[in-house]
Length: 286
Length: 294
View 1 (tube, chains in turn cyan, brown):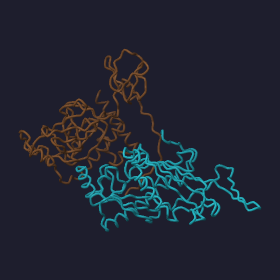
View 2: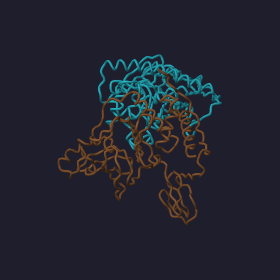
View 3: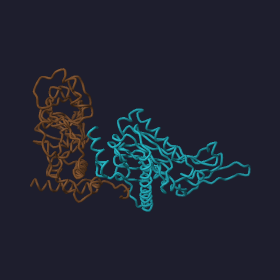
View 4: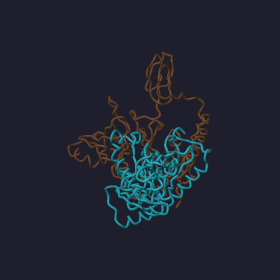
């Protein structure tokens, strides 16, 4: 890795040029498609270079948590498929999966991310639980960013059926599902943040590192940025150290790049929505 | 600062077969029947099942008189004597280095097959053995030639020429070995300003052309001076062009790489990896190569 390390370090330190010609703040080409899995309430597939992520959201009825009786909640699960890399064979992917799940829980623990009060049906008795399942199909670097984009797209695509609570004279409650299958509530994903990973290589930091660049970077910063440019949480990964000035610079870059990512993502999701039934579904065999 | 591009996926179109040169290649997938005629000898990539010859790998069928074999598209490297390879040192053992060359087994570089600095010719002593790590460490990239192939398929390398040895600054591209065309020479100085080593094992090394050839170094001293921006742009562009050619399954040799480079000049370096730009560039390269053949 030494020769690669030197070449990479030199190129990124002096000029804004990486091995594949991108600048330090350029993303690889991203492909997003929603509604790929038919038996979920919402799904999305994101391809970022060689990274391939599939997210499915299933809405099921459950009992609210004791500490928040008037709210629904989200449950995350990450499966690192053995197809992604040979390291995920058997139980190799569990550590990474736990890390991703904990990061997702941390980001969504903020109450302004998703309006969980709208997921309540009957206080203390019934609520909607959104089970978000993430499947890693291929690992090509920059997993966290791709996963956060896919989760946002899948939540945007989620359609929760409308239910009505009918009360009898005796006080027993009945839940009625509306007959129209298209009668559903959509989630407001305006405040759902996206994760921006900034990897430090040499003296500069890069956005959207490939596998090779990740191997060369000693430390990276994971930022969760909303569409308004607000930083909601921050995490440092890697064995190397970061000095406070570079952390400040990386935060500024992260906020800037995050705002751009959100505008592009919202634009493409709206475009896909507007195509409606005329959209050609590509799926996995396209 | 350009905006981040997010797009909707587009279904891939079937590659037009009309551009192929005349002969239709018989492409097979694992499990496809090649022939039911039992008069043929079966070669690599095939097996006999139920009175018919079945393919066991995905690739093109090759027929030489009575021998049928299937040449796979994506394989591990199978060493042949005389091949040029680019490999990475993984272990330093007692009298040899283990080099990773994308083969089924690690290749071996014996201490006696390595050039000593200054071009000395003498028997390797115990001091040489202890100083092995000064020559090559774990993680170093080297270019070497295949000297022999052991009975188990492992390859023995040698660097007994001044053009082989440790590689300095550059970019490594890993492709399938079947895409590298066998030629007289694998060391090319391209007219665009960079040099390229097309390893038969699928490892391609792109590096800036050195101004003067250092004869005394013998391949040990690596130049760690910063590479200029212009050279780095050329190298990045070559790297993206090679990846574009690989994605469209074109054979890699100096002419195809140079044509692809020239076809990519109107585009920005980072745009070359976009699917539509890739197709356009490789189509132009294919047409020029067909014109060249006559």
